[in-house]
Image 1 (cartoon, rainbow, N blue to C red):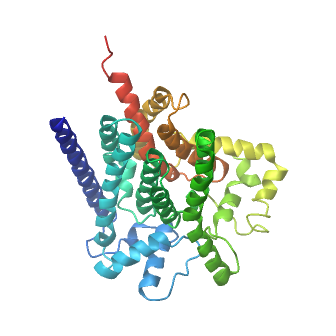
Image 2 (cartoon, rainbow, N blue to C red):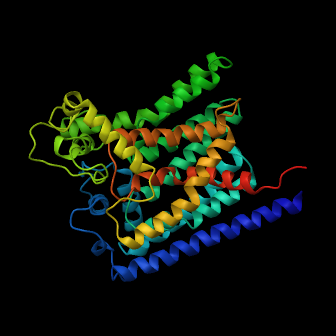
Length: 404
């Protein structure tokens, strides 16, 4: 048994080493592609209007004691960058090396989740898949909030799963909520996930742990939502709007649901295009809820487009080489993930762990089908570690020796 544990530990260490190596290689290619030296801040890699520039400027404002006045982005990632820039300067290495560490840590977190859900063998396979997953590896070099958001979300899942194993102990529930709210301040997209998790808890545990369940859900909601409510009050004081989400969230919804976009061919809707000349805002304007009410069937067609694109290997926008790479990765990972969904039989019996992962995957699928999707499918990145877990289980279930 000891030899087995040591062997698995060595394999995991080797996988983490591979993850670090792959991300360093990606960083070298990234710097060569955009002609970046170790002394540059890397801003020449991004167009003039880009999320990365917003995060960077938010960090610079914090360093210069100007406060956080970038209303379009939540503050978490810019705070993370500002700490790195304050201590290490604005060199590309100041953020890239910590993100390489975080990206490699995600491989370990994926191992832990897979081990809790299935077994350590599945964890090793899933961890290796994520360590070499090209889009995720390449993304580590960018100034993008997913590099902090994804590890925080995985930590939230880990502590929630530990709470499941330990009779919903308050410590792990609160820790899960803390990491959840930390990830929220990186990307607001996670805001409604606790509601999905609450439904999941009531479906699984209402009959057996009814009284305890009310305390658990209340504790989880408070730990998740008190900081966002405080941030919403701050936004009210600063901008006159009591909202915890970024200022352009409904504008993005507007850009993805308007009459010109709805009339495009079936696979032309990937990139959010905002038309600031429209009358009204995202809630009342032609591209917001008013559009959904007036054109419900067109809206459903847009939702179907986004759903199919979300679970597709690529879109029509990226360059040919990227399409080929993404399609090859998709063929290796996603079909076996679907097989893993089936073989895990998460719907049968009492299997709360795999169903929790399915709940998270379902949440992102529903959200981006209803609201928004980008042309590079970056919004799929938060579920890739979980997809790798089910893919690993699918491969293991398919190739494991049959008992005779």
